[in-house]
Length: 287
Length: 265
Image 1 (cartoon, rainbow over the protein chains, first blue to last red):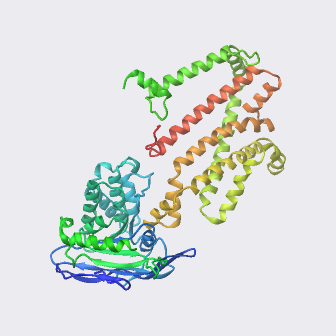
Image 2: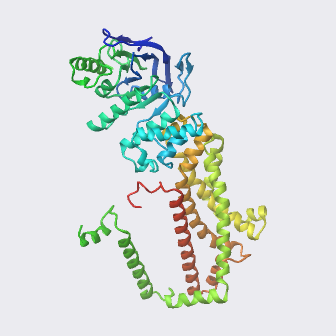
Image 3: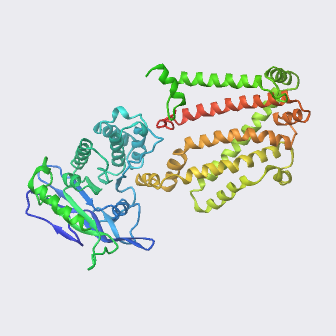
């Protein structure tokens, strides 16, 4: 997976048996200009469905980049909340231009409807999923159970802990957008225990269904590497004098499956992980 | 925590005290206020033993009760019209075409009601319609100012969140702008209900047809019946406090989420 039209693809020998299937998401030369500032410059990458024999293989893609580089703007393009100045973002196969609501969006501070209870937050999203009422009500119940939120169903968001609120925000998006989830800085400000729980949650969602795909936008290299199977590195090029050229683009794509760093528990203590982390950090420092 | 410490909390910043402690604090302050009133050295200030008999006399002999009811319903009617116009304008300020109108209405708060009386008389005639029109104008300019600011302060992330759930722009307006700010709308309504009483006495003075508590107040003032004036003011204050409390109870019932994160509930 992770074919790129621009930027290098970093890969090693295969460690797992897997097949790349149809395209799930394709970004073609997407540029974004705000005012006179070029924020994104011909960003291109593709995420394809992965199948593995005898197991469900959703995907987690880490989109890494320094602060202020344009990650959130790319996040908005992928979510359909903004249109690229040029280029396009396509969903599915055959690709259709992304519109808002096609992709689940979990923003950084987990926005929810503060005037609705947890259950109502899920139901209002379910009502827009196009499914029959009985079906989305059952789904809401199942998600509350899966995310250990049943006892909080009638609470308001302001009565929840940070972790609970995050789970409600994710569940709400899953109610509406079936298999595609964008998460903006989900590891920000978490202690180690909370970080592990979020990583487990992301892994759990990604492996719940074949087509589940989560794009995690973050600047936390280690956390992203631990949970992702592909890393996209967003950054700017430099000119000969070392000055940054405006407009971020995908600088590298790291295929962690081929490196044997995906789908394994306790991966962070392996030499391959440490080497990969160092490699990405070195590259990251230049962006 | 010791009792001494908990009592010191009432003069420490940002402390939460129990409901019973707060009731005692209010009781003591009311008692002190009454005592200061009773012992006040100003001869012109009527004492409680003059005010309460004067109120009783007005109530029993001069129809203060019906006048109060007249004024109350006038205020309620004006509030209803004001809320309809103001909330409509504030919510519709999501449309760029409406924003200049909202801004213009909000600027109307710099205009004095006395200067507008003649124009309103020509437009709606005198009597009750005039009083209603003046009240509605006086409250609308403030209501619109407050509510338009509430709507303008909704962060973009709230709109984007709703959009990400496949809501149409009008559905976004309903959930984020209307329902999402309902608690603040009721609070603005509460403030304007109080402003209504303040304007009511003035408006009823401008047009004295139908009477009302404002007209009665001005009559007593004209004859320098200070005990009666003071008594009417206290009665208006009491009605206002009950009204304020009622709106507060309504807000807590309709918007139970509103106070959950406050330090002082």
